[in-house]
Image (cartoon, rainbow, N blue to C red; front, side, top):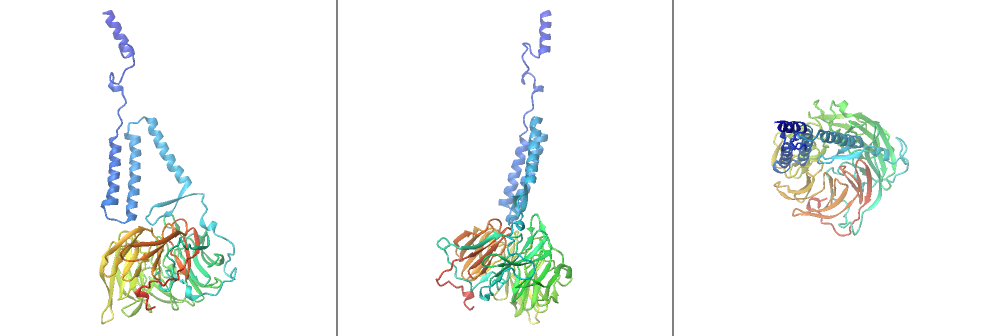
Length: 558
């Protein structure tokens, strides 16, 4: 009895009869519970299936695919963090270490990086916070305020001008442009200048040796006149105005228009200026949003002014019968207004439909055709109002209008009809989602239309709307059809030359012109190519060929 009692005492004191530490098998209640892997596996599985659904199964635009993917990834990371802290059964030291590391990474990222806008597919672009803004890098040599130019400029050569957004006819087509060489490796483009520039999404207007654009410099919104061949500043005009958002970037978004000795420029906050081409002095100025009771669009005022004869036509938007407005070029006098719709981000363009000169504008809720003489709305065609409208309506022969927008919406060909009483109406001929022009403005050649469908080059037959091919990623860039070749400025700053044929994509050559995201429309004056983005601008002399070009039948009468 005493021996048994002694052994029992030893067991109670040490936990085992022989005094060794208790094992998990000896005392299950003292063992650490196993890891809970199932919640983490479920979170990852659901995230992968969700991403697969949005990117593969569901038909949607590339922009929405990216948004849904980013939201899914952020949600999955947050749920995994909750799992680690509350459900994983890891040691608390490890849980707290994971939590502290995650918070530190997020904090360090927020301190060192900033979002510098997004790509055309809505992927954030990150830059270090200590990076200098483009306005701080812009050259100051020769820069003057309104007044005498810093240096003389040569007289304009009107035959080589690019006087407004998308060129002389505002359709991104130059039927009498230079015959560009097809091989830039054998004959490289010559860089005349490349330099920093103030922020903004404006393009260049070119008349003679003057090239004009708009940019942001701190709190000032500028219209700047550069010497075409050197990039030196001839004059600047400044307004105390600034538009900026994290996603859309900062600065003006329109391209100046030049007619004769006058420059017309519209800023991102609605300031419309008419300036003297030689000096930059103000001839007249007004805020079209205040005067017409319009409202500032979410991404800023973006409709480049259209000059028709002695009229300056702009689209302030609004519900007061003045969503499209015309002013006298010579003195800024109000001439007419028409329409009741909010402005989107497209620009007014001119065309002749049903025997009547019209101004077309792609507003927030519809495409409108206005009488160019009176501003009266002649017809309208309702369009999806949930997404921005940027590309210009394209007027085609036979009283047809091609309309396209991005974010998964697509394109439609409209037939504009006029009855015996003079009443207009628009009827749809076909509709397709095979061509969704977000920023890109479409061009046509020989019965086919070319555009960027979610950043990929595509060709459609105009008569049927059938897709002929889709190939080649150029991002959300812009075009100029130069005689028989398509000059493409890609979103990554490259310039490509395409032989536009309906059988396949034929890229002839390319070169790197700029660095960084390039949404701005290019300008081509003779053989001089002007390109820019929100960081820098450059001028290149493109090589030309002596061979006879393959002139499209649509241009042979010109």
